[in-house]
Image 1 (tube, helix red, strand yellow):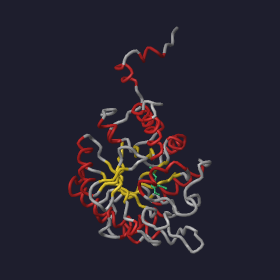
Image 2 (cartoon, helix red, strand yellow):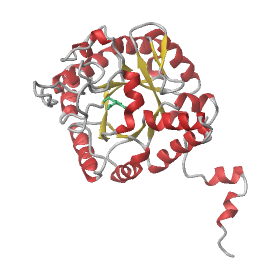
Image 3 (cartoon, protein in one colour):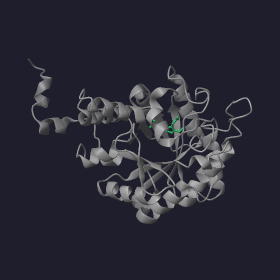
Image 4 (cartoon, protein in one colour):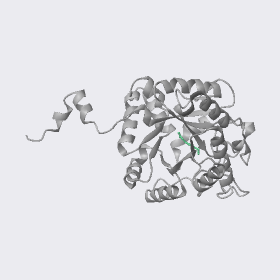
Length: 325
Ligand code: PBG
């Protein structure tokens, strides 16, 4: 036989030599849920992930950073009492995210990339990602100034990247314009170009207390049956000034990650979302799968499809347990 593919699989060293995909700590972004209270609260559906106060978050980031995890994505988990129909707490200078960003930047400066979620769902009493009118319709244009102001608050606190996940139309323009008007020309935007509606975000909503109180998110998040629509939205986001593009959830969208990669519009970030993480954890607890290995195989598949970076709850484990280095 002239062609024997197995020759290049004979040893680990040989396999490493010809490996096409690299997964390193630098590719991973660790999400953090930040709460106003000190200490930390476990999230039952996300083993190992907690809602943490600002000081606790800084301590955790310090440990992660030593292991090479140099990027974080922050989600605010305000008190129920701070929520309102108009989400006003999202623009509070002393809100939990501005506080966390200031503390992280003070501690780690430019060694850490701080990304912040820009979306109203954790801040509205009704749990939708935008303002809602009397008929319960999520308002697009009325929501934009709030999102822009929220992003500005984060930039003022020192955030490197604003990551709008709300899925309103035109929010990248709104955010870019307000940031620039205020001199924050160097703050980047990581836009959720492709974000599907559906059941993949369940554990996250437990963590962030952000489930919609009525209806669903299908009038603003995308229909998972569509692919071309996602590519179009990605193009629009780039035209509006997005610096990076998010695809979410990750594994159900490897085709879209690949197609966006081919389109060469901007660096691509894939969000390995809560239920992708939690289903591995649950199956591992049942003894049905080897969780650590399966989780790593998830991440490698996402990189192989073309994601430049991955938001994943498994980031810390990956570096702590030595899956990657
Ligand atoms: C906020 C937001 C959500 C996620 C990220 N940003 C929840 C949602 O859209 O309901 C989900 C992330 C995850 O499941 O890990 N809009």
